[in-house]
Length: 122
Image (tube, helix red, strand yellow):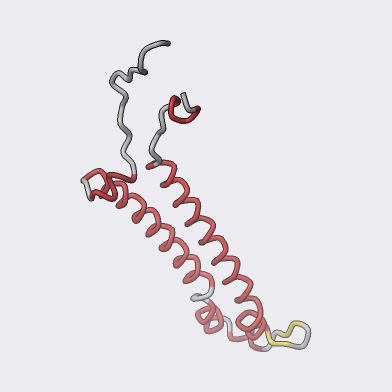
């Protein structure tokens, strides 16, 4: 081609400029990220409440567990003093990975599309 490149009617994708400018589209995009992260936090807290939070109820409903010993240690002590911590670490690891996936998907959603001419320098 000998003339300047012509761009006819390229569709503009919403991007970080909309978020920075505080436009309605930017607010919708940020709202979607915040909502997704909120849902993840609620899922994590629900798992925590059901698993660790229910242990006192289990011990109350089944008092004979206090007499059960594993390797000479009462089962409630093993559950609360040993097994809870790996569970918390695993739950934290899962939460961080999911949050990062949400942010990565959001970044891909709002990434500005560069025209091919600008990428290859022509």
